[in-house]
Length: 153
Figure: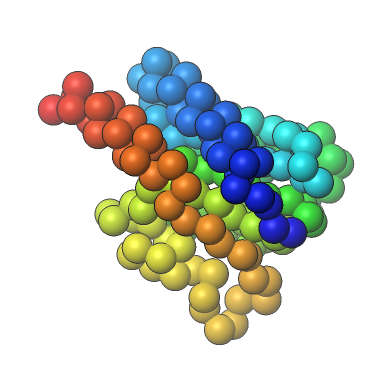
């Protein structure tokens, strides 16, 4: 499944909206949106503090919600849009869900597991490949993170 620039930008804008909502809740501002066949299925921001759950990253929340909605833990044909490069936990969950495509904004130089620190999807023994597009609206995503952490320092 490949998207077009216009629809990719639109879904990433929604992910950025979710990141802003997370910011307002005092969460690290990361947002995610899951789309199947061009239709938005689930959207969320980080909820680790809100839910008191270290696994409640935006990506994980969206994958869980989408699996419940579709009544299938395999999210075949799905594209996940996320504002920052996923960590190892989230990348692993995407493999388990058999996600078709990942589109993300800013690289995470301290913990990204797609290309910055690790390349989880590229390991030769992984039994599923995820198509990756990176850098979409990365300046917006990075600016949101910078302003969040500037307030806390």
